[in-house]
Amino acid sequence: MIITHKLQKADCLSHQIWPAIEKGWKDTPMKPIHFFWGLGGSNVKEIAQVQEKNEEWWFVDVGYLTQQITRYPSPIIHDYDKTYFRICKGGMHTKRGSVGTGQRLNVLKNQGIDTEFKGWYTGEVKHILLCPSSPTVTWHINGMSQEQWIETVTKDLRKYSQREIKVRNKPRPNNEFWNTDIKDWLIDCHCLVTNMSLSAIDAVLNKVPIITHTSNVAAPVASHDLKFIEKPLRPGRKTMDEWLKFVAENQFTLKEIETGVAYNTLRVQND
Image 1 (tube, rainbow, N blue to C red):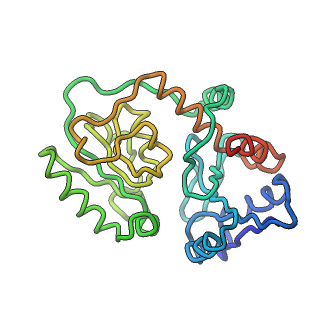
Image 2: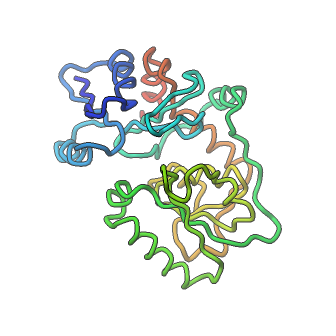
């Protein structure tokens, strides 16, 4: 029994995604399978209830390597063939699965989506960049407010480094980061630190090593302890290329969701 948890917001992207899930996912009448779009509405409470009952659930949100949507004032998908959504079993990010053949990654490259590992900065680097997840995600993952997370991480970093620390929050209308490009913040950046933000992907694609939460999709190519801030993990090209292939196997267009490609691919990924 497929259960898509509806959100009330009229223009929510889930209203486009749930019909595709309901059409392309194999139904199991005697077994509830829950789908959640983000952590909005009552999703946090309902996810907890599903976990208590030990029922299967999937988290759906924007993709990892994708053409970006317009978020405000209303979400807009500009190219349905180049816009991907992640579908993660039992968590906010994908944490397991096979590397894959690289075919899906090649499709992204041919679509002009940046998937290239460009190496790491080798010259002089300067600042540390903190990129917290949203307040809702930070509370859900870390059990503290976004402000507390920034304060705690900054204090802990000072035990190991005296580098300049910059903070970049998610761009939102009317905040100071709106209409800015994270790539500008990553120039000569020593390391990016985040909990669950997809800014980790921007960083490793732009020569900057990362420290992340262990549940971040980028965790396999990241350090996880702030004590490594001066010598963060810098995986080799083979590891990075294999990780990118893995990421590409866990995101799908609406058409791929509707036609069952997502279901069949993720069934293999989660065996």
